[in-house]
Image (tube, rainbow, N blue to C red; front, side, top):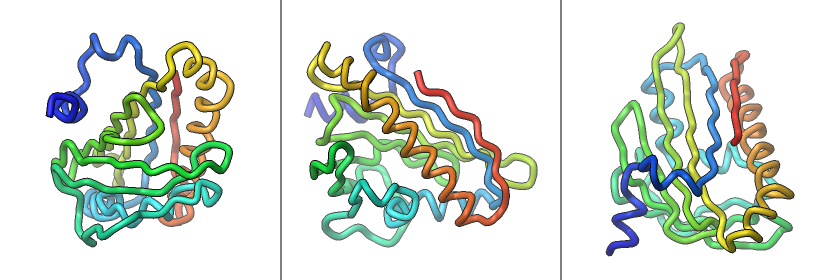
Length: 178
């Protein structure tokens, strides 16, 4: 229970010292309700994930917006085509403005992903903040430098392009990966 409680908690600045951060922003020409309906449905994640990741949801997931405590199990091939089971939990869901998913089981030592949606200029500014840490200490640091950082950039670049196609208008994007 202690591990789950820690995983579901909001990020604390002292905990972030060992973590990496990826941040993205993208303006979308849609309403706040459309943004929540799209991003709040786990079924849409496969539409914005690169095909080479072999992403699929395992088990039953309701065709409804995410809710606190919801667990979602995926099959994914994040690196080198090696299949992994990734289990996430929705820690926070504040419709239609924000939700947070955390990894309960998967390739990371820690994964905390906040999705926020802010009305802006007749559309929505979608923001992602991912705070993550790899396992294996110094070896994980090397893997981050050599492979993981670039892989995450490519995944989120693919996502940006996919969202531009889905919502069919030009979108602005601003990215930062630490």
